[in-house]
Length: 290
Image (cartoon, rainbow, N blue to C red; front, side, top):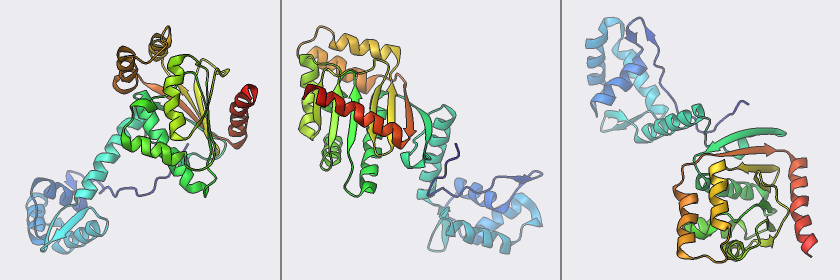
């Protein structure tokens, strides 16, 4: 699936003609070694390295182009590489590396209607933080009609998130209806789910949840989260035989969600009918307990 991104950085062309780089590439190369420099000094260095084929007028034109594109920063008639451009370049490289590994910071709005995308996150918490931000963005676009639905096997780690993340959850749940149906119904499930309830979600325990994935729906989006075998085993170890949240259990719980680098696969679908079915499934759990 092709993806268009806003705010693409302007990468200077690094093509070469024989052994000679083009003027834009030479400018970036020179300023990555020494800065700030006036246009004349940039030209002199390029001329010494590249011969007489490149003119001062050509270099000055390329400098103005790179400045207008945000690649160069000018102060007191001297030029250096823009810190914002360097930061964007670093972000671009990280996203490209993630994409090559099958991991990427995709925005839900980039997914076309009736399409699905598979994402891989390094851990539960990486997905969790990403999902909160994406849900907040969808809420902002909804015009105050945002609601969310979740069907989980055990509670997600709202207990150990930061103050900022908890504030984001409360903001997310401040409008609309938000329902979480959880299969677990022991005392530990109740203890952890109380955090979600305090944030504003409606809770139902003992749901008929599938063992293979946790599922979330809001708007036209459905997110199916598939933890690895090791993660499932870790959750079973935490919740099996535990009837309260003691210190040892809390340490294991936080370690699983915050320290583990066990990849989590997420299937994201943008499908209104599928999302509607998911919402009906969650609501049936609440009416069944009614």
